[in-house]
Length: 443
Image 1: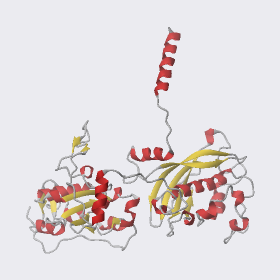
Image 2: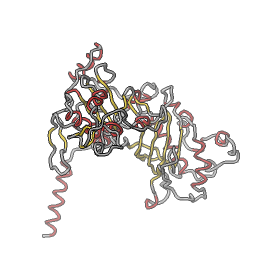
Image 3: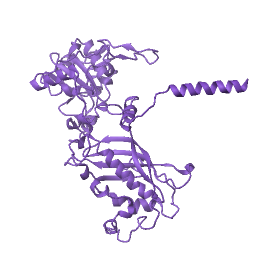
Image 4: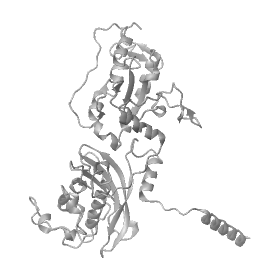
């Protein structure tokens, strides 16, 4: 009986395995899946991730294909921040082959050429701000030949500071590094760490990792016009809707605005709901919005639209879309206790669905800030406070067919928005919100 059961199980397993289609996925397809199958990637609250090939080299200088995992990519002003995990050494058994994590800043040169991109920061500990432990040294300390991680930190890693891809891409191992170049700089004249001592596995694979990261860096949109980078052929656009949009853009006409709420979408109305509900015109959250980070680009810079950011001035100055006017929602518009606490300056208290005017002039001021006769594109950090504001506007008589929740700054991380984003403080200010000369409504 036992033998018959085992044969049956083996037969079923064989049939099942034969029925599976052969999978031949490219890394690009795998990375696309990783960044679209979960809440990861461009336009989400997490950063894009990727798997990249690394030409790993072992002690006898035999090369193997390994993979690294880029778990962090963030566009900053003039450079991109990366975090990459890779195998540093395979000389010992797998039980001590811990993965090493490096933190990197790679520049975005004005030339747009990958060869000119340089290493701004390389660390196996703190990131570029020194506030976050973004790296991890996975190899032994000391290395069997005696070199310590502290020596590698002090004597080896600084060599790469400021080095460009053009300077590094031709090196096969660290033995190819020119001694005079390695020793250049104050206090480096006697340094020969690892390059000539023979303990080269970890340091060789730091070099290999850097080369792989530069190649990955070259896939960023900043290098789109670099003739040295092989580009995939652009797909032929045949969709009628996209062709129509292109025709409108060419004619200089404004693209027609959709209704603010996309009723073809669904969302989880309550956290305990087993099924999602269709979006309706009264659902003001960002999930139901017809305009968001996927299509805002075609609706920017219109004379018939007011563009408003409802975050406070501090968050706005850290990063914002150009030409958006800042109107702090929690600073000026709403506080649940404002109608009962005379020390609070906001225009409305109560709830967003049932706002209580704090001043006799509250509605007049609200209309001055959010004109009723204009189409309003409103954003915040994630879209939540815009939804609250839209409930207030609806309760106070606004035509909600002209008010759009375009989501939050956290979603506008795609390369297509970089030229429209200011991400360095243009001024330093400590705002104090107050209302003067208004008549408070007695509670």
